[in-house]
Image 1 (cartoon, rainbow, N blue to C red):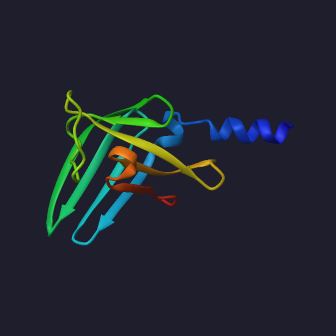
Image 2 (cartoon, rainbow, N blue to C red):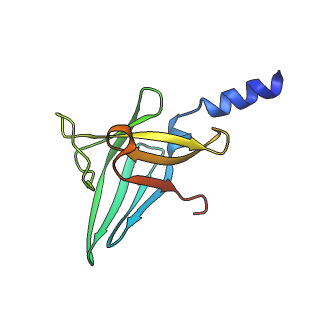
Length: 119
């Protein structure tokens, strides 16, 4: 029973520490690196057809597994909310223990950023 309790405590953790880290996205001629800092600031680099843009802003947790980004977030086709923010969904892999991706768009139809495990 104790092992199940420990697993649940880790699997249910979508807190700032669990979500913080560096994520990458790439497809054909575009890519992005997104770093979520524990102080709830983010840095983003977006590369499209040889052009590089950089952004800095804030992020926050919302609900179970939700993450919101301020209007400075550089989109890859994601729709902005009425307040200009972008919403993503944190997903866990490996038995639901470790945060592995942030998915954007309804039902994950938008870009998927993958967490880098080695910094």
